[in-house]
Image 1 (cartoon, rainbow, N blue to C red):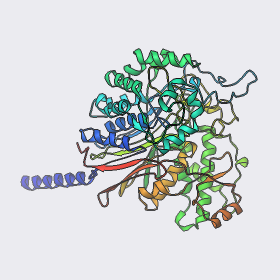
Image 2 (image 1 turned 135 degrees about the vertical axis):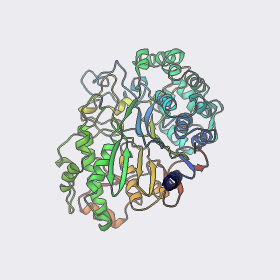
Image 3 (image 1 turned 180 degrees about the vertical axis):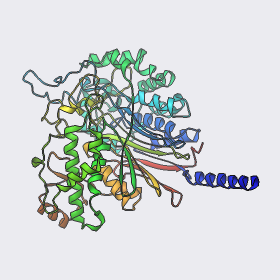
Image 4 (image 1 turned 90 degrees about the vertical axis):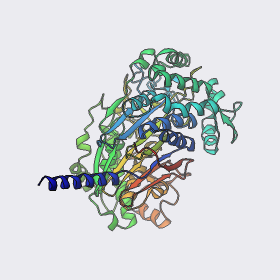
Length: 561
């Protein structure tokens, strides 16, 4: 009996070892918005780091080589999955309003919004969260010291990176604002003009700041000489930061939002991001339809109508959960989504003006995303931002830190558009220490067949891009399809369907217009999705970067510790 029991236990042990082996990806993968950032992450994996260490390296490298999209003067959300115990968390490194901020700080004496005040200049900057988040991730989830994971970024800042066409386009867009700040202009322009392709951007002050951060952790950024230079520089340019603002900044760990759709488990960003709730709402509405059985126009129609209703609820109910009671259970309830779906008419649109609610608020316009899977199965989806391209276009002297302009993500005044042409409501009003509402949507999608990691920049269009990627995944397609398929978007107000060229053919445009949709084709594409899929059924890992950007996706035999 003992021998038989021992044999049985040996069999069970071998069985579970085999299952465990199957349940680990054969390779690691990284997809990010810039080849140098992907390379930085791979370097850290090769040095024995895990996905979380690589996330620190990629975030910091992007802060150097994508100054138009993110930076240590900004913030973001890092969605983490730890393989050994299945633990999942969203590290909230979103910026905060300074303690001296006030609800009407961007209004003139007549109570009208002062154009550009929440976009250009130091008054537009919230208190950065990215350095605190990177230190937190390294300290509690990584295998390597923070200083090791920051080395690629320090090297890139010191040695420089080469300007490409994307950099030139965004620098030209923000050239006037960059010229208004001598520090920013000296770093990011070439003799006051948009740099030529091939010009090398060297950031010696940023290298020194990153070195102090690597040596002392958060104390090297939020206290000491760097903090004093930041505050002095901000206040010299009309901002309201204090040393207390920096000392008091803390990251928050949030429980991610989860939803189910056609056997897929979706895990996404929690408030103060609207992404996870809006995705859950749209998917719950669409679960009431057999999308595959519908013709293409009817399928597009119900997807657009689900977008409209989710964004309506976003404008009413969502804000910083530390300041505003977000009804998460209701908004993510399939029963509530069923009620919303019942209001969708198949033969006509529901005009947004007929839906009770308030105007929608915006996320950042130019942001960045990366996805990471290591050989142990740990994974990260992270979306980071400084809001508008090149943020506030201000660099405090001696720091190299490009300030964000995330204060524009608040509602400066209900009903008045922000820089993105969108308007906000009371739930997202400015308050001291409050985090602005965001659309960033780092997401995991998991089933017995595999695991997807995806996300994208794109402002208020982020959520609908991720939705279309999830639906494409549910249809059986792989990451190269998710990142490249033509996109369309509706956000409740303005009551317009924005779409990329080739999203609809001429017959489709006419049919949607006949249903009452107001369609607007965009002049250029949008988004920059970075995605990974681990197919458990065949043991393969696929990674893809959006062809609209200059991103890079790679796989490698690292991170199986």
